[in-house]
Image 1 (tube, rainbow, N blue to C red):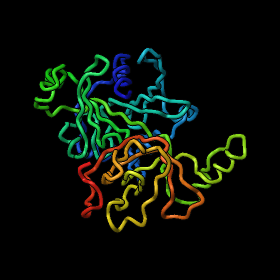
Image 2 (image 1 turned 135 degrees about the horizontal axis):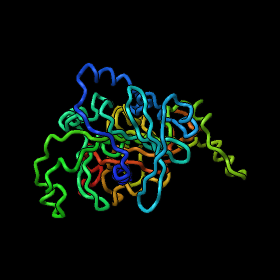
Image 3 (image 1 turned 180 degrees about the vertical axis):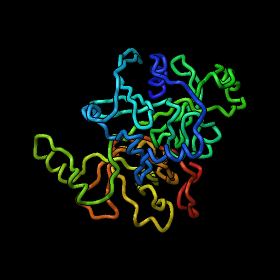
Length: 328
């Protein structure tokens, strides 16, 4: 969907000219404009808070104008704002909250010093685990680099015209058998997370308890379960059990982490389980929305995954003889 939005905005004329990237000293200055939290999310970008509301937009000390674009048969509103250092952004809102931000402003330098005009080689050096994606979507060519596929909401875009024409050939073999040139970033896009990360603090979770609906059953449920949080980390998913370890903690497949891993309950990740009851558990890098049990003591909180945002299967953890069937 983000690719479609980018294409639609480009068609609407919401682009800005591409210039030579800034020098090192200029990049250092611009880098101070990017504020990150402990999880690596952008929290403030050139003076624009990522928790911005539509009402808050009017209170920012920056000029903005309103535009419209069409995508998938619908018409949407976006706001073009000139922020600090004259960097121009397009902002999109959903239900009154900032949903996405994008720019092709030549003065923009993002996280890790990568900005508009940076070569693909610099993007890869800053984000070595990322992936370059290109192809055709909705009859439009696209080229994008995802720094951490599926997990960050951040994308660097490139002009398809800078790629060999074979990159967009309908023959998959031709499109992949090409040498990608050191193309330069033309656009940057970011989607802020919609839900806060769980800090696993009992007081903050209680304060973030869900809003009960009418009825005793709903009130009892909200007394036990927190409101929705975002969770990121690794999960060891077996045929009947699943355990989660937050970002920055040892994986549940490692012996020293076994007693600290949090059980994942419910049916929200059943589709990630091995298909056979005797199969070995699978290890995933996982990002999901869920709710935490407020009545259990840490560190082994129980969590209900409600919606998986992103996942990546990791190499299978080592298993002892006869522990499971590795062939399944």
